[in-house]
Image (cartoon, rainbow, N blue to C red; front, side, top):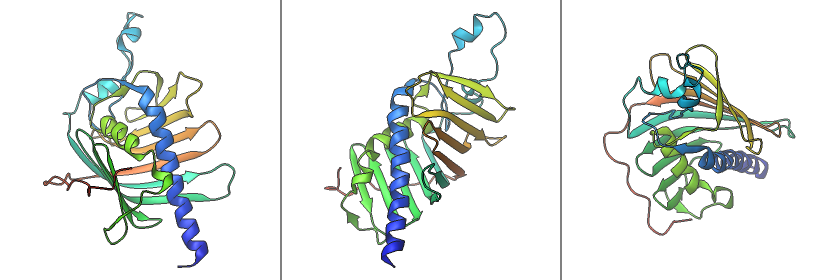
Length: 233
């Protein structure tokens, strides 16, 4: 592998970490209300909507209630991060797995092969051979991200500080009411016959855009092994 290729792959991996930890910082504030929902667990202020005396409009909370709650989830993912100041699309792909209450495992196959696992307060990074390596600085916020994402994907928490704009029964744009939020909007698209989000688009106020494509997989029957001791961040 050339030095340029290695640097490019590391930059793409870093972009993944930056996008995810930025999302974690925002989601940890936004997702504050407990809801019974699966993959996309997001809720709106139903009381405020009912004040008008009309039937509540379509909402993510109502859609979530059509499906049973889940405790595990797995998906193939592909991420494209468009950086406004760089004429390049940074890509990452692999599989992502969640298990309640606090386990997330991200197995990257591109831009390089590595596994990032959050198990409670322990963060483990494994190389392509499955051996533990030192946690790269760009992944320092990943433990927090793992907790927030597990809550989000498995129905632990949902955001209240959003305006929902629906585009048919399976697509919604969330606009945060807080002007300090790093994202100007979040777009979610769902499978028509299931609870899981299949596409997430995060638009940042600075002009960057991250698109994540998710393809749900059957959950593994056996629990994933706990992270290797001694690799906590």
